[in-house]
Image 1 (cartoon, one colour):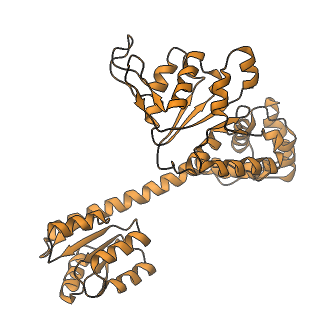
Image 2 (cartoon, helix red, strand yellow):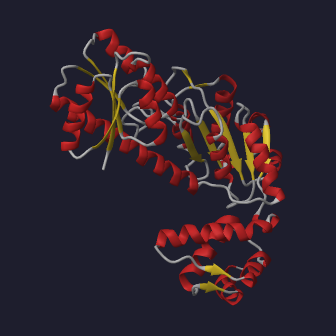
Image 3 (cartoon, helix red, strand yellow):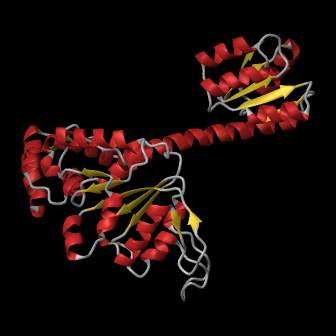
Length: 387
């Protein structure tokens, strides 16, 4: 049952609202002043708060400010018999969900409460989804090798320094890029990812910088590129070593001037983007071969973070195995399976050329094909084909 808190110094108003709301199947608590209301809020969760503005002692606006500071997700509907436009505007500016004048219109009150609860439910669902997303991109491991790069990433995250993440395929470079974003002051902004290896060279410039209508045959309308989409946030250039030289030159200009120009356009567009890049290539060798610009490399690698391979952090395998077992069994609706010590030992002995990506696939295969308890023999049977 949804819970509503009514804060009003008039007993008749409190009792009337309680009677009406209980008839509508709400659970209702009453407070005769702001201090009592805040005390009740500190002890219980409420879906909506109805708060009078004109009260002795702590007035409604002060109560609203306290609720916003301590319980920001709780919607507050302000009510008053002495209302005016200025009071209503002030209430909304300070975070009130809505403002209703006395005498209260019952229909409007009930609609407002339902709308406030819809917002509250939406916030709750958003938090749950965000938690699931964060879990999906969680970095697992406490080995010295991982602790070192995570400490470095956390130090860098709060700055505007550009970061170049290196490492083999499947090591978790994207996860580290997301960690940098989530722990930066840009966390509320967009995180935009571009896989430079997956975009044909003739389209990479349009993808990054956008294009104007008619810029080329298939350009039927204006298109914003990834730099514009990432404005105020982080742009992750994955597999930067596969970018064409012409695109590299434009990226270099964008990094130098924070200005881009759409393909087919001549208007400079200001962008505020933090660039994080990643590659599985040795860029020093690519520079020597003439495949990568040395000046761009130095622009991107203010901070260089090499992600270790799974073979360099085998101490993390038990924790990784437990994490993936719980994740995969949950996704499949299966009971949690157990790895025996000899199974862990076998997993630590293998050479993981595909790193974490390959390791997760093997764990999934063991869960699907193995019994409730997964043994070393199971690992030899189902992981061996990859060796």
